[in-house]
Length: 111
Image (cartoon, rainbow, N blue to C red; front, side, top):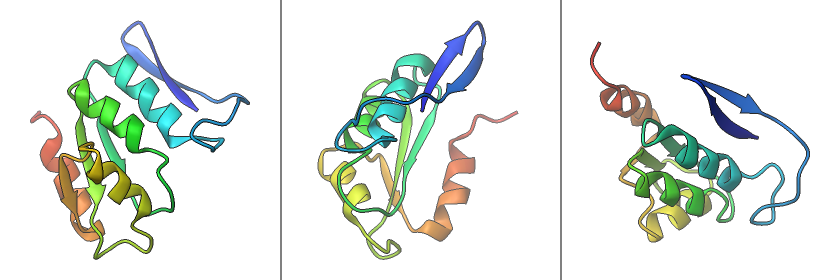
């Protein structure tokens, strides 16, 4: 799965592909496409999960100006994925699962 910008709209494309970071589908692949296509106008959230998939992609998003959130250890069933992202500096803010919706809303521009 990847995001593509066409004109002023975003599209999701799903197609078979090779494994990325050992996974297919890959969170890294998705987040890399978001970093490339959104010019910083996106928010990445990495939740509980095993392994490192998503960490590098979330870091790419952060480097391109996107906001990034990682689930904290206390509320994670498996802290692997959010910890890997936190350890490499990809997570701007860590939060408990129950607090992420409000945090997400606070990241959105006022209308």
